[in-house]
Amino acid sequence: MIPIGSHPAWHPVLETVAYAAGYAVFRSVRSRQGDIVSEPQRWTVLAAAAVGALLGSRLLGLAEQWPTVLAAWRAGRVWALLLSPGGKTIVGGLLGGWLGVEIVKRMSGIRRRTGDLFVLPLCVGIAVGRVGYLLAGFADDTYGKPTNLPWAIDLGDGIGRHPVQLYEILFLILVGVLLSANFRLPEGARFRIFLAAYFAWRIAVDFLKTQPLVHGLNMIQWACVAGLATLGALYFNDERASRRKAVQHVVVG
Amino acid sequence: MSWWADRSIFAKIVTVLALAFVAGVGLCGVDGAFFANLPGPHEEFGPNTFIGTIGAFALVLSALGLVLTTVAWLLSPPVAHIRRKDPESENLLDSPDDEEKSD
Image (cartoon, rainbow over all chains, first blue to last red; front, top):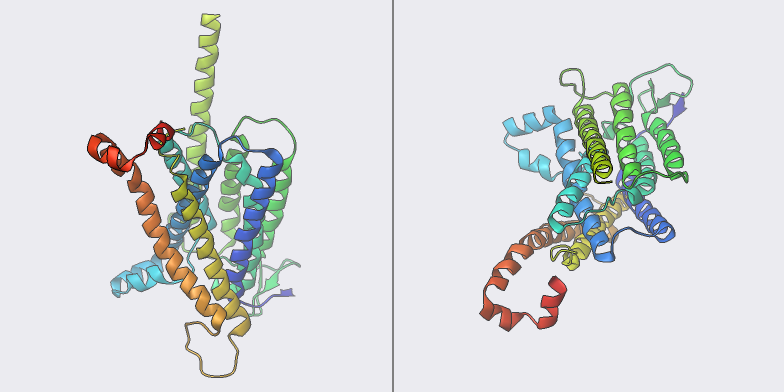
């Protein structure tokens, strides 16, 4: 068993390092690969992603802690809970950021798919942030269930637990390496593959976490199911559109 | 590019404020991680050092700024649309260059 302990103060420090690292990687990838949209459009997308991610991560974070929110509501101190730090989730940030960008793109008439540049920065940022979650220990609700595996970690209570954050870091390294490979994919496909892989991963790995369940899944897993269903619908919609275009091309030709 | 997307100054401000918010979180974290055990009386919640105070200010101010700028960003297209419909205010407030850019 590997002793880790609980160091909750490191969580916000590493959260900030994660954002900084993600932004640095984004700038590096963008300067290396170039951008498919203009500078003002990229700023618009970035801002929409930032606002959507902040809101989404907080909303799903509160939904995830629904028993606490319900108790606070009954005790008449829901505002104190809303303004308290913590209670943010990566899945909520991804879904909120994605939704924010799609809304703003529609409003501003941006037709290109802008997500591919975010894949590697997200992998790096989430992986660095997960170190903070690991060090936070019991202060964060993302710790793993007890296990007797040789790589179990001790968060200070003498019980070996799954190092779920380390599992996720390894998964993100794998996804980052695979999606950075130089093979041709349609515009926006890398981002959608990343989202699908991450949502599927979270559905699986969250079974190793101790969180309140609703009909067998926790709120984050339900959000991932919704995200996967949306991605599936978008995929079939795109397929149908490209088939229709091909038929029209044949008819006109 | 549409007129709405051309309002990228709001987008830049929102992005910078979001970064300031995150920096505020980090400074508060540094304050908590490294200076929580300083000698002397401490409140349970609140900054321990100057770094924590700056972090708390950055958090509060950037959060307020984010809300205000996002609202202004979302309201700017309809406001500009109304302004453009009124020829007098257009003559007073908009230069011909701006009109060309917005198309």
